[in-house]
Amino acid sequence: MTAIISFVSQKGGVGKTTSAINLATAFAFGGYSSLLVDLDPQSSIRFSMGVNNKAPVGTRELFLDPSVPIKELVQDTDHENMDFIFSNIETISHERSVFDIGNDSGFLQQRLENAKDDYDFIIIDSPASTNNMAVNAIYCSDLIILPLQCESLAIKSLKRFLVAFNELQRQLTSKNLRLAGILLTMYDRKFEVHRRVSQQIYKVLSDSVFETIIPRNEAIIEASALGKSVITYKLNSIGATAYIKLMNELVDKFSLR
Image: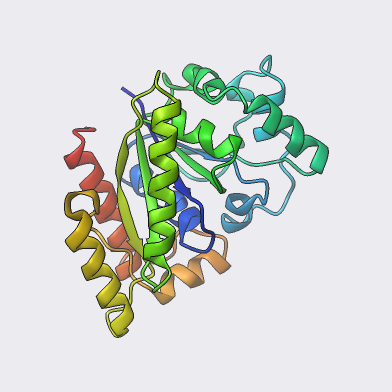
């Protein structure tokens, strides 16, 4: 059975795209087939994976042309067990049209239904917002991951997201929205503020926080600059180890094997 996992956050710069890329890669590395879908108009995944050419088809057609099968939106790459649907929403008019279609919260769920026979996991990187595209990602997901940077403003942004998420739960009564957990990112144990923030979050939310913490790691930064996942760039790094650990935690905690 295919599991759809979305990374969502109202705040940018929290490691959302990096985490989506590396979790999808970890699944592929573990022998699972994965599809990584980029809903962000900034096309961050395409750039982060070193693909410089514009995507001829992608999320624009995913929303605006339902006659195009999912298989025709997938871009060929050299990643074994891993496919991509890149963002190609390049103009304001396209973005507005996609947002209009996204008024139907269940639209993306219907579109991805035909992809479920081909993949074990579908990973979605949503925009840093709670706009229509992000709501579509949340609605179609079996599990939702909230990346949270270990900084002093993190708790404020966490409270805002949880309020928005609770509001969505009340509005989207036909769907049981499920927050898989909060993923602490960019953690550096040398910084007191990181230790303090992480301790506060674990104390207050306990079971809602992943045991895995993504460290601030040079290999992760280098890999992104080179257009690679940290797993394919430097498998023995603590960054790669953390994402593989996250994959195993998800599989075990939610019985996804």
